[in-house]
Image 1 (tube, helix red, strand yellow):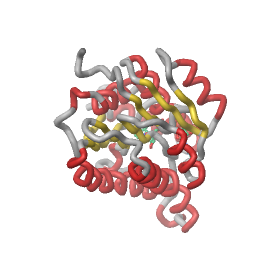
Image 2 (tube, rainbow, N blue to C red):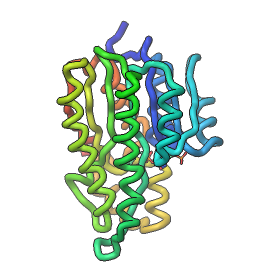
Image 3 (cartoon, rainbow, N blue to C red):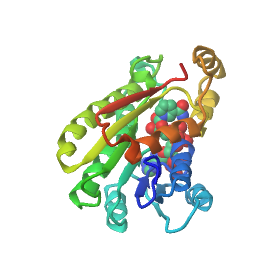
Amino acid sequence: MSPFELNGKTILVTGASSGLGKQTAITASRYGAKVIITGRNAVRLDETFRSLLGEGHMQILADLTIQADIDRLVAGIPQIHGLVHSTGISDMTPASYITSDTIAKTFRISFDAIVLLTSGVLRKKKLVKNNSAIVFISSISTRYPFTGGAMYVSAKAAIEGYSRVLAKELAPRGTRVNCIAPALVRTPMMNETAENYSQEVITQIEERQLLGLGNPDDVANSIVFFLSDASKWITAGHLILGGG
Ligand SMILES: NC(=O)c1ccc[n+]([C@@H]2O[C@H](COP(=O)([O-])OP(=O)(O)OC[C@H]3O[C@@H](n4cnc5c(N)ncnc54)[C@H](OP(=O)(O)O)[C@@H]3O)[C@@H](O)[C@H]2O)c1
């Protein structure tokens, strides 16, 4: 069997009702994984579910900012070999307009929920020992920040720090922890940014990225690599997917 395949592995993908999480779930199923997908929107989550290849997949609706939903999700899954965190929201609040609500809104889903789901999965022993993997999605903006991105970038930087500590803590049990940092990718989040803020900003970014805007499968393929045995000697990694 090719080390790039995911046969025999069960993978939990959050944010699977849209964008990068959706494509990651589909690609992982194409590589042979059984996939457990979660998100809030029932219609879009089911659309992802119906796009999965193979059998034995599960879908579980959950709002990951609610602890009871995290607990129900963790209780409802079998043992997994991989966990991909693809939830998140965009935020473009200029520094002088930030309030405690702005901080809470971004961090609750882009940091707290991710950390709490991870600890739930570990505490309930749902992640197999030896050769399991956790993948976080940060953003290239922690290196190349954008105006108005104070909360978004800060939450991503916090996740990067968290993932490095987790890599150290989980290495002895055989779990690898890696972080992907994409530049701008064509997903509903990007469309929302263009609509709510400015198409001009998107065009400027597109011109700056040597290979142009990314597509969800560009990110999903790298995530699958980090879930697969092909990356069994890689942990505490930080892969920038910037299109050059
Ligand atoms: N697109 C890019 O250019 C880009 C670049 C760098 C990094 N990223 C990061 O990649 C990740 C995925 O982004 P994307 O572009 O795929 O975004 P997206 O299309 O907007 O998808 C976001 C996902 O997060 C889920 N979500 C949001 N709030 C939630 C909550 N409270 N509970 C459970 N799920 C929740 C959404 O579920 P529902 O729709 O069901 O509510 C959706 O499935 C994010 O962390 C983002 O910051 C994206």
